[in-house]
Image (cartoon, rainbow, N blue to C red):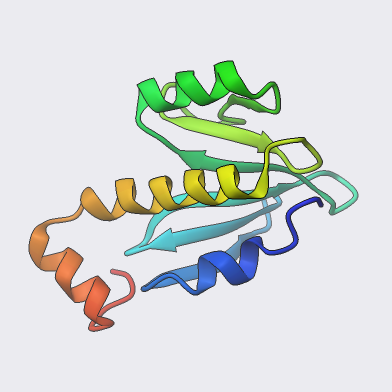
Length: 125
């Protein structure tokens, strides 16, 4: 995978948890029990997509700019986008997309739960 820094980058974010969904072959990154990013593996166990959530217009924009950003693999194609793990999306762009996904999902919680997550009081339901 071209982006070996993803685990470390995402796990440094407040309240992020990581698990492996064996049935899907996905490493899932969640905040408060909600998915915001995943590293999807192929049958050989190699990463082939990084899937993340964006506002629909943002997703459309990034897909138009980078051929290695596609509608979400096995996800709602309006909100979810997949980046080829061996693609040509610059690291800084992918980091920005991951940050946007994290913030989008965090913002979906009530202000009280956001504060609890960000303070470390809770990590998930």
